[in-house]
Image (cartoon, rainbow, N blue to C red; front, side, top):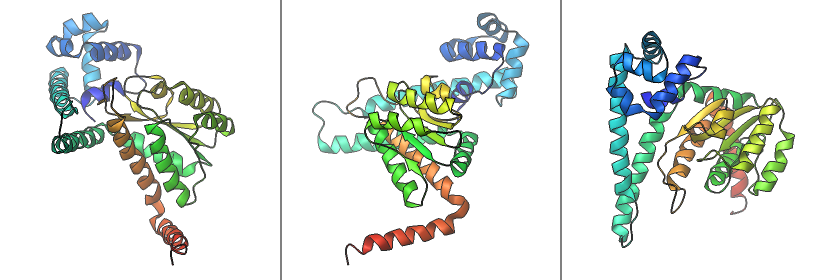
Length: 282
């Protein structure tokens, strides 16, 4: 995970750290150009607090902290230019569309893997292994990712609850208990139907896994494990392609992590299910 994403995902900050994080998130380039004393004054913290935070976040000191932030900003600007270059435009021929799509997909994969928080993934997978049921919530393209994961998990005998109809999704949330895991997938993180179901699950004591952007949206704030999607799409989209592909990377990793502890027994289930399906075509 790059430093800027790590800062935004920093868990349990002190009041001073929270003020510093908010200031750096909103004024990143200004923070890079500031001295430790100027940044301390603008963020409302002490210079010593900034130095301590720099070390806690994994840098040797404030100088190294600013260098890492500058590298992140440069990378984000490069990505922004690349994203603009990937946008499908009026009059593009099929060959151009193929080239732009290839670049876009490569960028999605690279940025998604850079944002993965290993500890969050481990906690998410462990919670899924211990769950009585796994409830999935997602609408539209996010719903397609839920469907894919539900099919994979049900094939190996995991009690999974997912409904394509979002009214049915919300209705199913009343069955969530503290022994369950709830997975919410939403690029924006503010879909009312998803949030209402996640909030109920939270109240019941379920473990919450969120796949969403790292912009402190409602879904992000409710989650125990935050699996961060890169912010690659404009408000006006021809289709939720980048966010869908990034979400599928995460759902595949959750599934692969889930089966990794007892792969041989799951492999036997794969063989049995394949034999069952083959009987229809013999």
